[in-house]
Image (cartoon, rainbow, N blue to C red):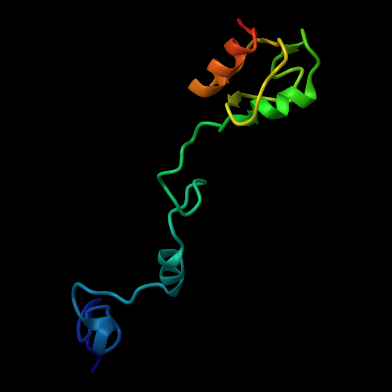
Length: 119
């Protein structure tokens, strides 16, 4: 005579062992691979890096060789897309006009000392 009814013997669980126990189930193998992948989210390995675009850096000494006296220094004349920052390394002996760029304290002093103009 058969067991009858829908749920008896293994109560629909089918086998002995880990599969028959309540609570914990076997994990899908793919989950182990997914858990090994770090949560980068497009920031690389260091989550503390800034999201903002870093400025392109030029030294005062470089501008002294790149421009003639009286010319205007801007991101457009430097052929740069985005922000530009001028640092104070080197010497400046030309009178230049600056617009749309940021400066370090030493660069600002060197530009004013050479008679340059900041807009």
